[in-house]
Length: 402
Image (cartoon, rainbow, N blue to C red; front, side, top):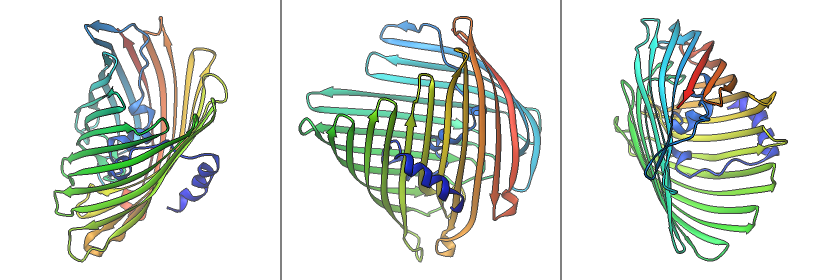
């Protein structure tokens, strides 16, 4: 965790993190939610649709198609192994709404690798969320699903995963400034050839608005994590969150707490961890956005009978150039420790990852066509030498919105 200290201190000085649900902080660090924060634009860049939606009754859909080519060195096909490869990806994207209450997105894709060291794969991601209010009651529901074959630093190889995530919460306005919320989160991760797990978390919070630009919450959470290798765990967590917008240009917030995790395996001591999610969003002028994020997570590792503890911090810039070109830059560091149950939670491996992302894109022909180029450099320094790597990828993406 040493590489994070100076950068994390800067993030704390500038502001606090975007308020997260308690469930995110107890989801495994390789979850889709965390990955979306640290993935290169080369793999998770979204083409912005400039076309009018297609309306079918209460459903409005913005469909688009894209092609992405990337190449690079040091793609990992196993610990201590690497290969060069070109990647051709063909995909669709659907973003839409159902009435005024629901939004959804779905993106299927097919990746083809030039090297026989990797397997061509179909991937897909789906997200939907909605809410409804009756009097002083408000209910929110969200559902996510992903099937992916991403390269993970944890496994040092192409890793097939299937994940589900469900969130349901109900809030009641006690008065104009105080509300109470009850919620449940369920997540499932099934990984081919590695550890699989599922967790259920129950949350209760009391929320208070002190002014139009300041709010705070006290959150209690209790849950259970079931692992297919019988390394199950109960966890309890208490945390507080605060959100503050001192001006239209700045938003800062934080969620900070403590989690206590106990295991069903005999002889394994409890684990206590500080949990946090910190961020700053700053928009100095129109079409310029700067953000700083810092997060910690704890959960079951993809390796059997192992807990994964992770901290990450990153700074991101989004800038409009010449009125029609978009530049996105990102730099981040993460530190992950792996603790073995068979060794009484002793750390058996520690990884320090740094990455730099750059993406330059533009929309043309009434914003129906998008073109972008991207670059990522990433290095992993591990005390297990077979997981060390340093490589880069670059490429181009072209999209069309119907």
